[in-house]
Image (cartoon, rainbow, N blue to C red; front, side, top):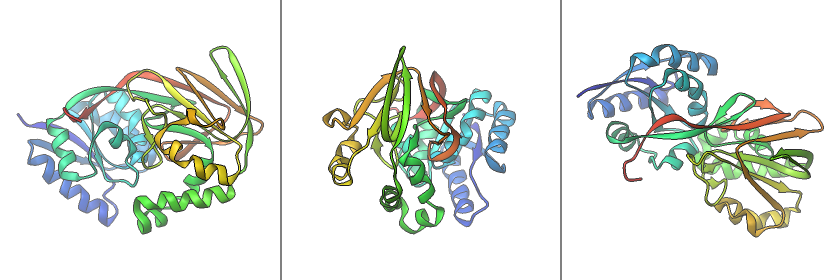
Length: 292
């Protein structure tokens, strides 16, 4: 039985147009009839999905984590399953779900996979799939330009991280959770809803995107040489092995800083502190592999 999908992909660039044609053909080969929808900006994309999405069996979004983040509010309103075609740089949501960065393979999962209900993080009413953070990652987002990504691909993250570290400065913050307050001097506070962020780093070793909880870590002020030794632990989410990394788990957090600081959500700077973090449990259905 043929299903109808609203396809979201930025076809204005040459690579985007080529990707759209490949996706349409790959979906059609698996009896998914797709109709391309184009919108300008985040709000336009969310509005397009919310308005047109209910007329389709599913929403298929192609792009990176920024595209998935922009689509989230519309998918919430349309109440249709989300199929993910990872064509971005990091593709951390796809990595969490076990979807490979290959158009044909991902399209087959969209057609033959199973619906999976996952959580959605929220910071100041802005949704996020993977992680929202303050500090070092904001500078990384600024350094990770489109030129850097096109030149180095996923290795652009390493280049941007090196540049971000050169500009990193600790800041004072206050975290409220479960009736207690923690004051700290930190380089970064990150709150994860999913498993991966920043091109494959784990937010916490045993994190899951459907466990109804958020995982927070704070990278307390350390010297550069110590940070270099900590990189493997940060990559694997093994934060407990270092005293400089504070870890917390819960359903809600409040973060305050002396001055407003930008908040990075899924690689996009979308709000600022003071920031309230929460989780919408099993809020969105995605099409995931039946055997990830």
